[in-house]
Length: 272
Image: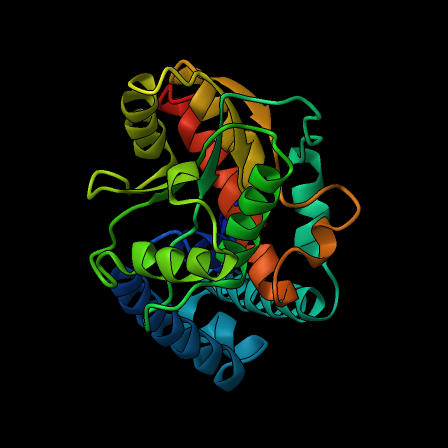
């Protein structure tokens, strides 16, 4: 009986766990995994509604019928959570424990994690927020130099660097006051920290104001500290406005889930 109960609980959790896992994959794998998940879920739901109640028990056995019922219940639960997260800032509440207060101190440099680019090569909402905040800190005289870190994507290439360069040109900054870092080695927060360590060492900049958005500040600070930096957190958001950090509530939920999973993964891999 205990095994069947665990099986039912597992079946109930599968849809939600699958949703979270699929969202962490690269775009090509994500689309394939999502299609597979939708097909399996559709077949399971069709079987459930066609063979409801006693018919399920007769056709696949009592235990199998309960497991199938648990899976469909899990799908409905996931649908309820998505509906709730669409209208309410659930992601903001999940992100709140990971927020760190903004440092009031000055640093050797301001380091901005620029946040990628869309498939069309345009900046995302998060990216614009980060770059704008870094420029604001530079104009306030919080550090002598601003570093805007951009990486490489197999889908958009170096589009991140292109929009960062275009956007910063609007502010008419002194060219000597900022640098746009471009490297194919920058693919994750960990590789970004490693590249920053090598680059900023030449400029004798160890104390940095680290700029990023939302709950990403916690994992970012820990990762850059692991790389040897003295990190002063400079998050774009705080505990009050984190609920409005993204352009919609579902994006906020995805970002928060990504950070919690990333935090666990980085701890297991000894990256923080």
